[in-house]
Length: 478
Image 1 (tube, rainbow, N blue to C red):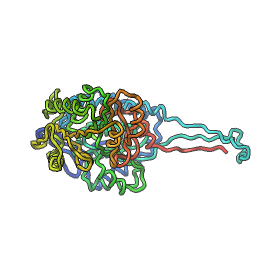
Image 2: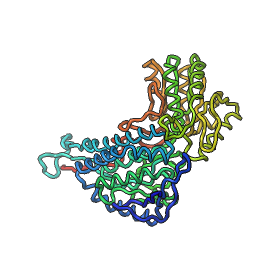
Image 3: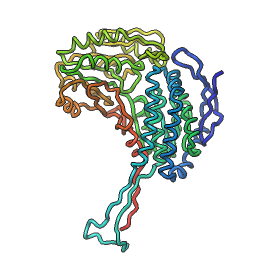
Image 4: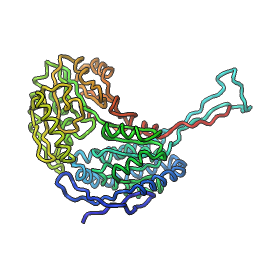
């Protein structure tokens, strides 16, 4: 019998307005019944979070650090349960799901540690001789410290249902901000399991809420001025729409990309092939920093493409519950249909399929396209699918120029043995992150992560997120 999951807010589980079924994209298995919040319940949860802020912001730093550390320890004890949840509801390969759980534990652990580094400053006020004391205070100084800004609204994407959530929730709790989480509709189960963990770790009532809801209710949350910050991960279209309607609150946006790799003639081709197969096709390409475009210097184009196509032809979509699976089905059949349409449209305009190209239901073959042009949607839009394009460029400079998409700028990868090329790429590439001798899929929890141009606004890492969720407050003795 499947479990019915209620809403979690005000420190307890509460009856939802309605339930909807949650089925696995792997085989349609009924996983659970998920409660949805009504508009009234969303308003009530927001009111409770706003009221809780006065208590949460006054928590001593050591208490906040202890809470977040207990959450990390509890996640560690439930590693496999959480990984299985991610695998089943997101169709993520079980090996990748385990890596995600490990990373989420790191995110909470680092957030607990970062509490100890949120220092203030003491600044002298007697620097100018023509500014005498107005109060007669013998030690003229100012004390400045960071304070939490208020309740946070967190809206993550489906593809990392634990670690994307962790990157919003852990820094908020560590900074002293209550957080209301609206999970992705495709993957709410892992967020509800996290609510169990946070509740059992002893989080103050009102400091954390999980509210699965429809888009109308979610937009009401976004527009609510009681939230001080909106943290959103998802598509470019939705992200900028939410920014337009959210009012004056702070906004962190981590959105799409069409990740590029630039390959020099001195690249280690064997290594590059292995990493490009992984970066382009793990989890069916449903990763915002996944590899989508490869620009290869002319002298190594033929040998690289031959090796790459040969390797990709050996990769088949398999049940993500298998330990050997690199990719399974896409999150929905509609997502796979869109990927197939991008491929067919490109072929109709002159592109050549070097591997894959076929779809059955939600299962899309790993696909390589050659002879593409910058105007093709499979190049200039985010595919978010197991589709990679390969393009010949005359030299390194041309590859960097092609990689600089006019719309996106999330992350890029470069393959070269020349440190001067590395430094040149760091200067030239208009991306939030550049990964050396690897694909753009790399991310570390303590490193600033985010995009330029339409790919985002602000940066996520434990420290940078906590800085966004706090502000300076100054006490002066003139």
